[in-house]
Image (cartoon, rainbow, N blue to C red; front, side):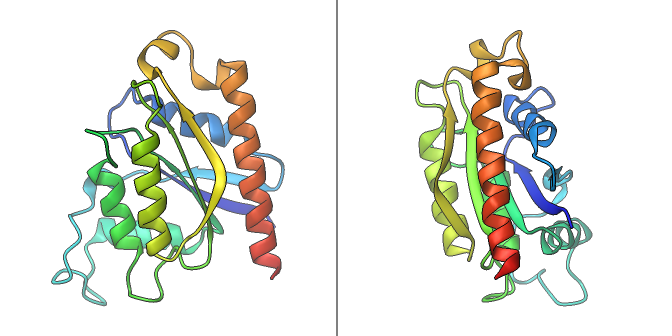
Length: 187
């Protein structure tokens, strides 16, 4: 059985370096692991309990929950917007945190990585994402971190998969997350 890792990308931009990083993670996944990029975060309405009604959940949110339900682990890619987590990623975490006590993240391993233009590579946003997903019930793997600074210049002419250093670090993150997911499934 293949371990499915659901990737959520916090940038909606077509040329997003975080999306490129997620694509690289999918290519670098070890045997027995599949990294699936979720498409459609832009279509999900902001979380509102009034519209989170069993049997009548907005289609885009239901699609996210269905994809998450079938995942054994999560890999979040977060740029940094004004020093914090992008709204689209936080919104996905909010939808997946419900129903309370039984959200899609509950007990599943989660890693947060990313790249940003600043000198720290989005560390603040990634820390905020770890905090939010941990509160939402995810088993955040705290030592699985990858923050790549200078995204606009570093990846101006090179895809992250073609950057030897980044590819090696990303492959290690995906391999270790796969190992945590295997352990969780076996338990």
